Amino acid sequence: MLRYTINILFIFWSLSSFSQKQINDTLIKNDSIHILKPFNVRIGFDLGNFIDGKLNNNPKTAFFIDSNIYKNYFLCLEVGSNNNDFNNSVYHFQTKGNYLKLGVDYNIYDNWPGMDNQISMGFHYGYSNFTGTLVGYKINQPSNTFPPTENIVNKEFKNISGKWFEITSKLQVEVLRHIYLGYSISLKYLLSAKRTNEYEVPFIPGFYKVNSNRNFGFGMQYYISYRFGKD
Image 1 (cartoon, helix red, strand yellow):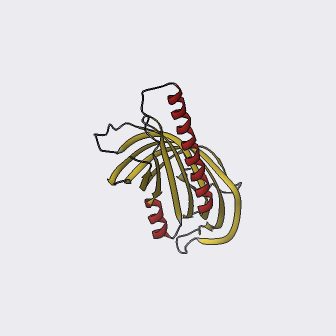
Image 2 (tube, rainbow, N blue to C red; image 1 turned 180 degrees about the horizontal axis):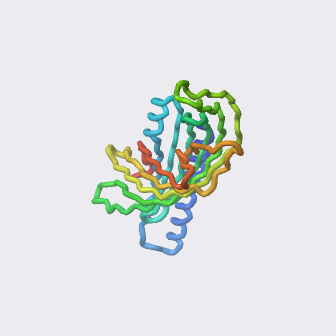
Image 3 (cartoon, rainbow, N blue to C red; image 1 turned 90 degrees about the vertical axis):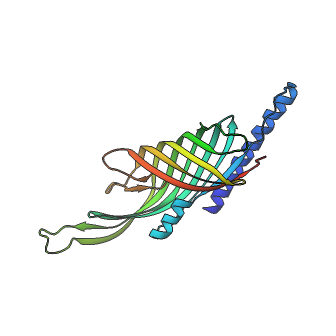
């Protein structure tokens, strides 16, 4: 997962640098008097998911990178991995896999001189591929005298996937030079989910909990990040 993340971040950085060079070359050729600020690239880590994973013994990691591509517009990329253990009165299901989200944020906050904070709205597309394991299912007894009996199955389902769109509201505040703390709230809509033939998948990495009655979901993340290339 770490190698996969580093490769994606390197490609993202290279594309940003190349785009900036092309724009600067064009401005020089046209003898423009406009001064274009260099690209700022911010790399962050999802603290909330990491802590939640440690507390619940379900490892979760997520990294994001964003870069201002035009005025107040930011190109955003997030990659992560989630493990989840779902156990209710019907069945016990575990999921493990990776996800990727790509989108654009627009900063609606007008910073005062010397400030570099961000309040943004964004639209992102998400994709997840993961493995699910049906640990067991429960059979309720005719009376309440005895507890439900769980039949252990341990059946694995590979290459399950999910796709979704999400509308995101994000706040990031510079607490120290180049260092930011923030959070985001997302309203998600599940476009498609390749499910098993026997059971609904209760959790999709990156989308989180799946509601069988509707395609909407909700997510919240807490970040710490560092900005490179800032003046």
